[in-house]
Amino acid sequence: SKIKTLYFSLPSNSPDFTGFEQGRVNWDFDTPFEYWKPLIEYSLDNNFSFIYLLNSPKIYTQFDNLNEHLEKLDKLINNLRKLNCNKARVCNPQLMEYLNKNYPDIELYLSTSAELQSIKQYSNLFAIFKNIKECVPSWDVNKNFKLLKNLRKKFPNIKVELMVNEGCIPACPIR
Image (cartoon, rainbow, N blue to C red):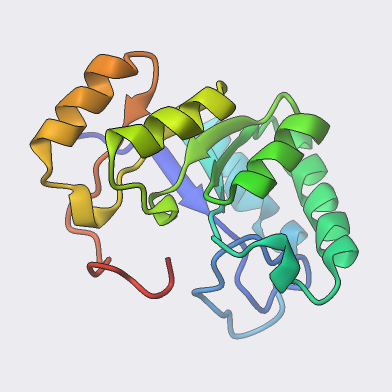
């Protein structure tokens, strides 16, 4: 095994947190994007693939002020693009469509938080979003070898990443 990819999202108490991330972590003090920028650059300089996590399943109607969150998202995406980061792990189809429309250069990586359970669900989503590069099946289906085999067979151009030793629980309420 070799670690080649890093995942990251801003802490939920960051002033640049967009709300499209899963707010699982708080930091001891405010950490804007600029605080994390050198670590992102270091990762990229050392040939790691860097994927930003926009993997909240939250739908648009759950935002008090959607425009404010979209402005923060636009600022974040542009900051990432300046660093040549163009990969996002996404769950929400509304957000996938927004990224495709406004940032067609962003590569989509499907999050485990999508909670897809069947080949038909994957087929429907992949038919809508033809630019998904990779998917992570939910922990709940991680041992469904028939599904995993059929995913690889039916979608040979989409990478399938499996979680190993992940702290996820079946039917996780955060997802």
